[in-house]
Length: 120
Image (tube, rainbow, N blue to C red; front, side, top):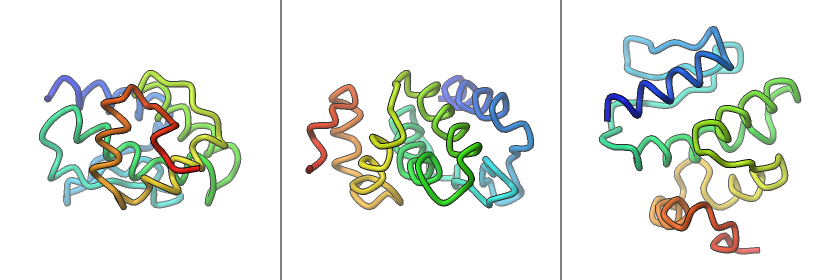
């Protein structure tokens, strides 16, 4: 688990150099826009992937400048080994953002990121 988290943190740090982990064990991915995720409940690789989808899907497609949207999307795609577009991330955010459906998120990950699992 530590290796997986370190791999993710290296990707984040490379794309968002001002990222850091605060005293509450929150990964602040983009301090300027308060993009963050809590790390306390991460136990395994699947948890990391769920967190990435739940908390980085929105800033990957809306809510921040286009420059940072591209960088957040790069973090997601680099970590997950995917090539999602901004439109696809918007669709993912609709169904999986903010951890609104963890079971569906797990099914999505285990399917190899099959977008057809998400309602149209």
